[in-house]
Image: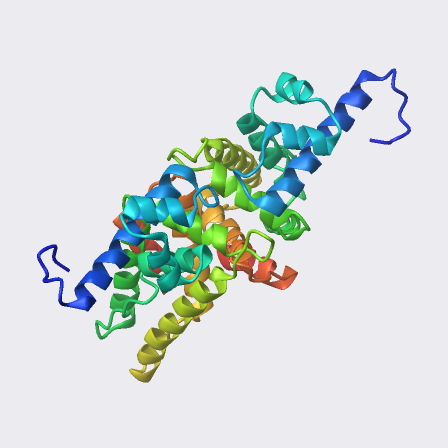
Length: 187
Length: 187
């Protein structure tokens, strides 16, 4: 997406507005935390009208879920390197990059905030976990079809993703060697 | 602590006020989420004066950290069953009980909210993790002194505590068999 994209291409403007609104949400989550800002404040920071936000996302909650799913790459294609070990190492490194980037912790914290069953939870965790599990499963299925013996998707969640998420949430660093070690241990 | 404890015992009243304030915080975290209530609202719900809260805890942030450390039993003694497997199973079951109880998720979510480095974080994660790691280490040291070969404390964090925390945060259930399985796999 480029700032010089001609205005007559509606996809360009729409993508730009989307990126501006997502960035405004990420900044506000980082600065104030979940629950402490409104659609009006997001729109003002993104330089768009409130009505544009409501028309596109419907509600603050849907917008926040959209940000989490996009920023945590829950919709990105999974690696397909030709081997289980290669796929898992590449995938784990991608997740590590997402969650250790400048806004990574804020987005993970938002995912947690949105995931609860209680009055504060919005069920976004179901969507996020379902997406992650579906993608993982297809990657593991490919390994099985090649004759490899992949772990369960839930084992990847428990022993590769969960340690990385918890370490990032509690402010401990994670290194590429640590992430590779989690994958090697699982395999 | 009993409701009929005579008023001339100051420890009784102090403990009662502490429990009432902790309960009010837990309820407000559950209902509204972190960041969406004040010391005045906590005091009103607990039936105490604002000044009592400030005198005892100093600030909202210190009070919230105190609630997290207490509710997650970070100050409780560790099990000492005579074997590494027994200690780890008992410990993991205790943690599972804490975080799956009625207010468990709300307290875990509060711990996450308080743990960040950013403007929303209060460094409570350091205190919580430091307590947990210190306690775990002493339990593992006892096993080593008995001639057993214990894992590192960080391996217990990564492969027993982290999966339980993440599953609870994302609304997935955990069973006693699942928790035992995490310990068996680590050992």
